[in-house]
Length: 146
Image (cartoon, rainbow, N blue to C red; front, side, top):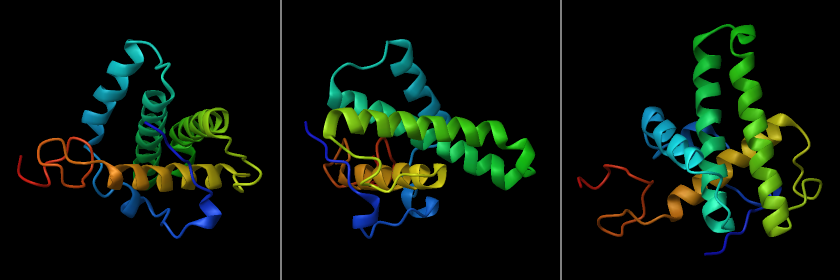
């Protein structure tokens, strides 16, 4: 399996969280998925590893967004910083395994990096076939009544 991170400046994908995470599993389910993979050890296979780093970064971004919406900014700082660090890990992975250039991809700020996570998650989730019927849908979704 190959993957090609994209230059966020070169695509029209929305970095809007509502669009990016429209078909994402519930946060509790995604925490379980990430925790299970982390407990088993960080994936070595680049294709499997990317899914881990992408889903972890998206999960932490979603948590930070919820924290920011629910609490005062100073109360959400930890969640925001955690999401920023996860975005950096995904970008570092993509840089090593695909040649992504942070400078070339204009990933200079933490906001740029979190936008990158959203764009990559949206592309990834839309490209995945539904496990039961083969339709395009997010991982482990109930979209098609399965």
